Length: 149
Image (cartoon, rainbow, N blue to C red; front, side, top):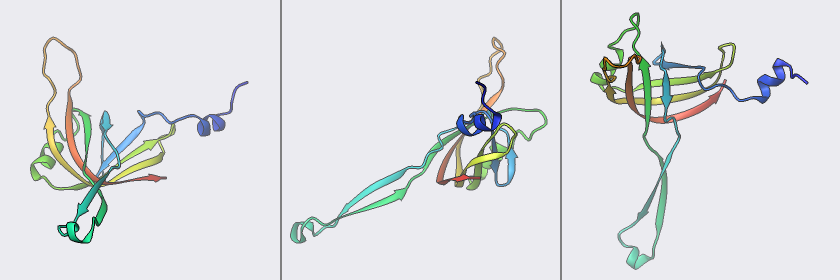
């Protein structure tokens, strides 16, 4: 028995290829975004007089920077130097990666409050292949939140 499209929409996972990326309210096209993760660093502290007063250990949970990789195909109509200028300025920007449904409406979003570029890698140039030109941008990100839209 065939299922209705509403049943399929609510019971099957979304496709990972249908996503949008915004960097400071500027829509950008990337072929791949990987490494979005929320991590906490566990720090343990024992004070210097613990030999006299006993072992009093305090623990802290702090957010840490995680590496995110963004790959972008070079298109003639787009600004090819946007990523390079962002790397040269070395400023932090906000970023949002939205997962979209079949109609193109955003369903889930990963919002990054602090994204700082650390490297921009040019593609491998080879006359022997017919590969697409893809630049790789590596970011250090912090304060990721997941929002259901």
